[in-house]
Image (cartoon, rainbow, N blue to C red):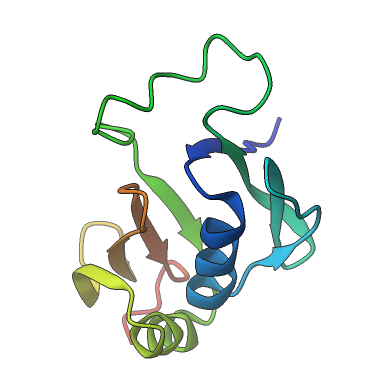
Length: 128
């Protein structure tokens, strides 16, 4: 089993562009209501417009917290390039690239434009 997270957003094309520019993902579907984003050829994230289709369990867009207690965690072997891309694109940085000594890898934390918390982590054992 592989996770294929889906998050709800107000503007699917804008969110898709953010993930493409900041995290280097690629569009595999496209459209104003739904998007599939891939990384290294595999599905990494799905985006769904809040008010599209009739899915009663997607949540309430009127509640401002986006994924309180949930963090979207992505692994990227070239963590240095990922960090430079995020900074160049002006991402909202919560924690700069640093060594997480407990996990044994480098990581950085971002907040996407919809309010979701994103972590990008490098390879285990790569302290930089």
